[in-house]
Image 1 (tube, rainbow, N blue to C red):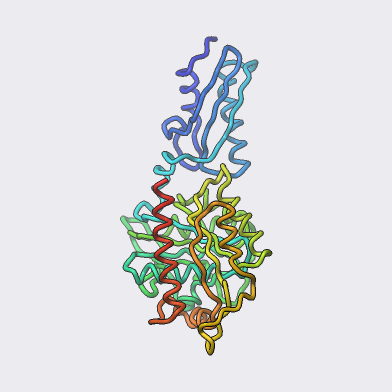
Image 2 (image 1 turned 120 degrees about the vertical axis):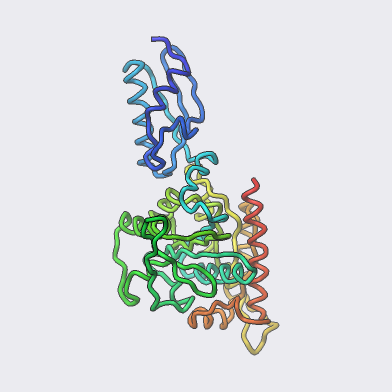
Length: 355
């Protein structure tokens, strides 16, 4: 049987991308085709970066091509992450959100949730429409940081469909797994169950029109992160780290994970939290108790933007415990520091989206 490109495309047009529910040809997921009299080489993109999803696509391509062209033909299929064209299709999820940004860290305890809360607060102060998804399934903290622990989201009707209406605080829309569990109870879920719960915070909620949706991720590089990339069309990610080497090693792994070809989410920048300690009675003093400029140097070494320093001051912790992020304080050094971070953040997000 004579092999030509049109015949190959016809065969590939019968293969459905499982997450996008359309065939890989109409979705423009076939990146390249090379063939000869006895071999076919194909490069295909998929939305799910997980190894098992890529393997299933390889098996589907090989099976269907061999079924039509014969079992003796050699078939090679390279499977890569989803390209920009398919990302546009995936905007069926959160279509009215202009910028979707994950806030991540490789290590726990570096203040990622505090940074997320204050970034959101600073954006809201600047007049932007903002939402937060608290995706830290096992340690949700946004209900506490925004003083909405006792709130529960209501269901609303959206064009005949019942959807979750996010909780509002300081003009910010918030959804957290903490709204659906008792505050003192541990969330004991296996990976797939946690991933499903996270997905529902995006697909079953009515977010409406937003300028920024910030996603507070759990620490590490695991199931939750892969599920997020699979489900949500992220525009970019911000990595939070403290200056000491033990945190920087994990931050470096976080950057590398998002830069993997199968994930390929731009890193808008690295932010250094707890950069120095300043006591209330000595506001001009800086004590570099975790080291100096560690995250800044990491950003320069990995050729990613540096978003700035956030000092370790008592008022940030107090503000988080009281449920009013420190960025809302008036005329304080820490509020000004967060305002500067927000301005830099806005510019860096614009920059990565232009690339």
